[in-house]
Length: 385
Ligand SMILES: [Zn+2]
Ligand SMILES: [Zn+2]
Image (cartoon, rainbow, N blue to C red; front, side):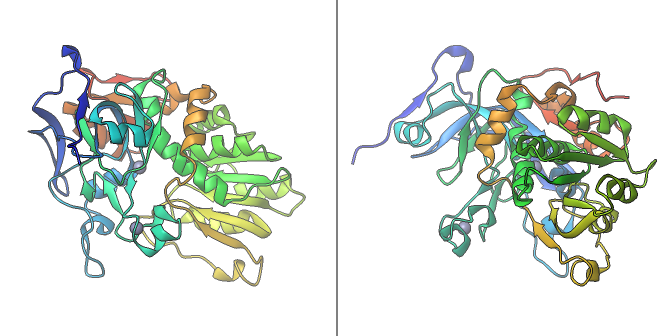
């Protein structure tokens, strides 16, 4: 056995330094910009120079100490301290051995996205092909592996990667992660051409679900939100009709549009408990409810709507399995209003402002990203009202 040789991009402009800046999770509400060693790829691993990393609602929940991440009396902590945060990323391959490059079909200088879950490939779920439900479920930025709120990130051998065009702006390319998740929710809906599909929420996931539903081309795509600005974006992302639920009765309106029957498919992407009962009420009998959100509190609903009244299909959806190539293709097509969806980009050293902006529901942001190569924050004019 010969020792694997690591190839590296060697022009001086892209030479890999020994240390880098990284957003390190010291604990809830204690993320710091630290100087850490740049990881060295071992056999089968790649090193990426981070092009961009999105800030996700789950980053915020972790930052604010949610029990899902840090445990409570009912469950152990899952997130790890001293990890570099960030899971929605794309980067440029700057070093790795020939086997790693060949396995992933990439060359030095190519851009790739990584799925956020790093499956074990050994548990019952992985063995049955459901890698996205992996039991140990290591995740970049939370558990097992450092994330990409840094200048460089290591791609371990177990990670899943996808090529992304270098022609996309970095923050647009990094939207592949939330878009693949949203498109998985769409696929769970098993949408038919004659369907009326209602998507609740026009944040990053809801907009992705609208765009994905548009690709399935059903009879009618209806978006619900409380913000006219976001609903304007929903129209640009592919909604035929939008309803501001603070101004109109969405259930009555959808019934009116469907001869009193109700929607065929409802995709919930708000994370608000009231959107659950809204969905159960908006669906027709034998309709399909898809839940993508993570909730901050329990949803209380009349379960007899699911059984006795309507015999509904209620489906969960998690991550974006088998949707990454389609999501990347959709981004590369230029059909989506990405300049308006990606409202804010921050340099690494202003990560705290990025987190605070995502936390601020009045802040006018849709997708907030961190772009390490930036020195100043940039804001798109659209939506920001
Ligand atoms: Zn995310
Ligand atoms: Zn597994």
